[in-house]
Image (cartoon, rainbow, N blue to C red; front, side, top):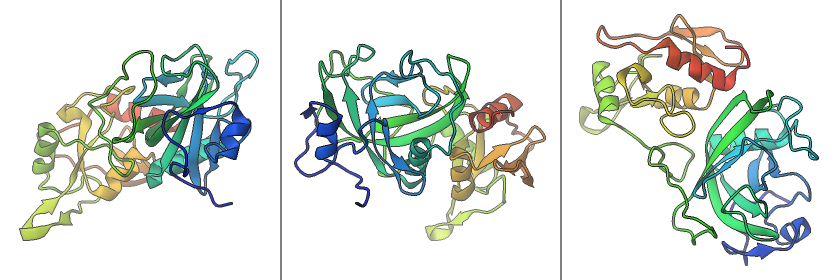
Length: 291
């Protein structure tokens, strides 16, 4: 059966389900055990938030969700590193890149004010807006995913108000929407050209287009600064490559592909603009075990 992205017919936000079999039969979450439904080729269509990982954070309108693998189901402790190629993790990475909506189901557990009092509850559609790796609380490398709830849906069940995060905007694709005054200043320094490739995007009426890219993201949990030393002027392609982990910045301020760390360009800098090694190293650590 083809994987379906969206809310199944006859299902509504807030609907209760008795158990995993009930979720399966309604097409809300197909796996009877796994918390993530998806593959690297197709993307992830649904997840279950059930408090099984200590690094999870449930804020209602956005979730910091721990990927699959390395967790002892009896103690809920991480006992091994997670892999980005595990089917569920790879599926969420693909959903982020392609902007595919993910169904979120919450299971009853004590760790969240948004968890239902019993069984499982459908919370609606979310987008994977960020993905990164880090060493978790138990000392093993894990993959974390931020999911933001799409607007114009019925309210979610909660014992307290949901938390919003103004540093993130939600669109129909998995990209953050933000262009600050400092971002515009950086782009003007380079005449709207990319610091990696030197290219620009011609627009109507001899206008040029580039994007201001924050190296260390502003939103939770990264909490980077909206400052000149954290912003690059990039073309859309290299901005996406930076955000999606395909490119990192080395200590000599060259741009390298993450897969092999082979430099393919030196960043160009205006005389009045520099970015810090601290921000470049932070970004690298999101994608590389040793950076």
